[in-house]
Structures are given as structure tokens and as C-alpha cells.
Amino acid sequence: MMLAVQRSAVRGTAAAPPSKSHTHRAFILAALADGESVVSSPLLGEDTCATLDAVAALGAAVSRRGDDVVICGGGLHAPEKVIDCKNSGTSMRILAGVAAQIAGTTSFTGDASLCSRPMKPLLDALTDLGVAVTAADGGCAPFSVTGPATGGCVHIRGDISSQFISALLIGAPLSGRELNIHLTTPLTSRPYAEMTIAAMQRRGVSVITTGDGFIVPADQSYRPVPVTVGGDFSSAAFLFAAGALAGDVCVTNLDPADPQGDKMFIDLLERLGAAVSRGPDGTVRAGRGELRAADVNLADAPDLFPIAAVLATCCCGTTKLYGAAHLRFKESDRIRSTALFLRDMGADITETDDGCIIRGPCPLHGAKVTTFGDHRIMMAAAVAGLIADGTTVIDDPGCCAVSYPAFVADMQALGADMRYI
Ligand SMILES: O=C(O)C1=C[C@@H](OP(=O)(O)O)[C@@H](O)[C@H](O)C1
Ligand SMILES: C=C(OP(=O)(O)O)C(=O)O
Image (cartoon, rainbow, N blue to C red; front, side):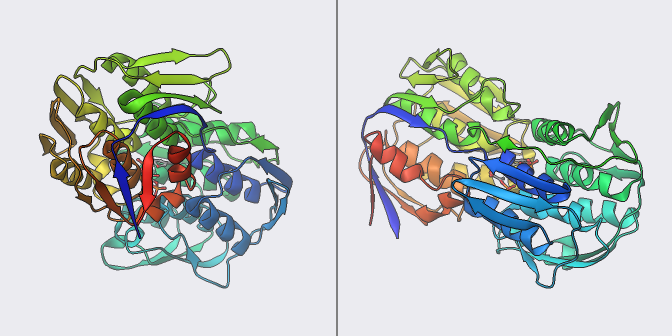
């Protein structure tokens, strides 16, 4: 199946889908807390469902109560079956940190994309903490960890994925001993580590931020708390960009106080010259404006890169997106896959090591887009198709189900001419 997109205007209101990152953390931390946790409004996308299946395999009792997911956690054990994290880096990295704290062997696998993404820095850190690790060549999945880990001191790089740090932090209280994490390179995607710490603290576990990392003090445990998952700013970025490029879109279900780093997209739209207005209830509206180029550091918000690059094609002048070399380790090499589809659509775009340079404005035309099975490439290309001359034909449109299953339906409801062919 393909998705055919024609130039079209979008207008109206859409609710941001629930946050993928918050849902992963809510499911995993509920599994680690003794007792029942109710998770309301979770994202039930392919990635978060992979996490839910995994926590059930590790021994948490998972049930549905209406739209809520109820998890009875505590007393986890090594599973019989291999944990398949499918396309989800967050699931694999954080759950590896959890499994490392459990006696016995837990094996992990994923799809072809996930099995090519880096795991070695985390697996090396777990080895230093006394975990026996067996992994494929290069330290990627499939791999197994045999725990439990000890506490102590660990050195790990911070510039490949913050998920390694989230994994060590979340698993640490299970050992009962202090864990001292020293970062050997600067931490990228830092807001995600901060989301992890906030989620741990909400459940009664404190984390100390040090000059070069983090300490999880000894003798702490998670307590169950009910959570309602708020909207996802990374997914909302596609709705905002559609409004800023092709009409006027109002997005609800976003909390301005949420720690998600990708809420910077709203400031970015304003900086580039889009018409942005913020309602008192957190509702944000984005419409057309005279867009002008800017230098944008995406070190802390890498998931915004593909859609920010689409916006940049409509900016007057040279836009530089930089600071995000870790984009090369996502579901696809997102610097390469974004440059490929935008160049095919007529953009003047040059890849750099840590981003790209776009000389705009570039009139876009329809093209055949390869998503490489990457949800954010699919959604960014679909938004680009709204302003392109002719038809944009996107392969594997179902891949958006990992983070935003209703993306195409939401866009169609706003008036986008998107059809499955
Ligand atoms: O912890 C998380 O929920 C995430 C962390 C980020 O990954 P990196 O830390 O690998 O950049 C982000 O890209 C991903 O979509 C979700
Ligand atoms: C990189 C992403 O997720 P993950 O690392 O969990 O696969 C993403 O959603 O863009």
C-alpha cells in the first residue's frame, strides 16, 4: 500500500495523540512498582504496545479497564520468551536496563532497523556492573543479559542516545545499591533523561544530577501512582507544520508545563515567522506567515528534524539544522532519508555530519518517497506533499502506527487530500 498526497489546504482542530515517551515510562515504571497502577489515556501505538507486551512477559499483570491500562507490578522474573521490541529503541534500551536487574537471562530482539541501532555503550556499561551479556557482532540486537547487576560506578557516553542513561537510571533502584553514572561525552536528547527523572521522582525515587552525570541513591523503591498521559509534542509538530504551511490548525491536548523537549517546536514556528497563537488551556494554533531562515540546534529535540527540514524548504534564506549527529542512529539514518526525499521533491538541501543546510524557498514537486519504514519520514513527507505540485506517493504509510496511528485520518479530517492507493 502507498499513500498519495495532493496539494491541499488544512483547516480545523485536532487533538495531539498521547505521548509515546510518557507512555513507555508509565508502563515500565508501573511494572517496577509493587501494587496496582492505572495508566489513563496511554498511547497504544506499535512501539508502546511492544513495551506493554514486554512488561507482561517479565511478569507484570496487565489488563484493560475501559480506555485505561492497569498494571500490577513488582516481583518481575526473567521471561521464557524472547522480548521482541519490534521498531522501538526506547523499549529495547530501557527494558534492557530493567532486565539487567533481574536474576536469570532475558533475550531481546527487534526488527531489522532496531537490530542495526547501537546498543553497545549500554551493554558495555551493564557488563561493568556485573551483568553477563551476549550480543551479535558490533554489540547490536539480538542480545541477552543475565542479571542481576550490582550497583556502583559506571562510565558511559552520552552522545549516542539518552535512552542508555534512562535505562541505567530506571533499573538502578532494583539493585538496592547506589548507582553513580559518569558521562564521558555530552548528553544529547537531555529532555528525555529529564522526563525519566521526573517520572521516577513522581513514584518516590530520587535522582541527583552531578557535574558529569547522575546518582541514584541506594535503598529506594518505586511506588504505584495513577497517571494520565498527556499529548505528544513530537507528533503534534506534524499538525502544526501542516497548519503553518497549508492553512490553519489548532492543536488541543497539550500541556505547556510538560517536560517534553519537543515543545520547542512551537517557539521555532514563531521564530521562523509562522502565525502562532496560544490559548489559555494549552491549545496552540499555527497558521501561515512569511517564513524566514534560521539556525536551529536540534541536539535536544532530534525527532523534530524531518519536519523542521520540510518547514525550512519554505523559509526565505539559508536554514541550518545542526547539533544532532545522533539522528544517524534512528529508525533510519534520518539526515540521509530526509535529504533524499526532500531533494527528490525539489529542495536545495545539503547533508552535514550533524544536520543539514537548506537554501529556500524551494518550490516542491511531487515525487515517489521511500520512508525506510521510518514513521517520522512518512509523516514529514506527507506534510510536504500538501504544498507540492503534483502527486507525492509515499511507500509503507502504515509505519506511522508506531507513534501516531491516526495520523492519516487526522490529516484527512483537517481537509488534507491523502488517499491510500
Ligand atoms: O527516551 C525517549 O523516550 C526517547 C529519546 C530520544 O532518543 P535518543 O535519546 O536516542 O535521541 C527520542 O529520539 C526518542 O523518540 C524517544
Ligand atoms: C527515535 C524514535 O523512537 P525510538 O528510539 O524509541 O525507536 C522516534 O520515535 O523518533
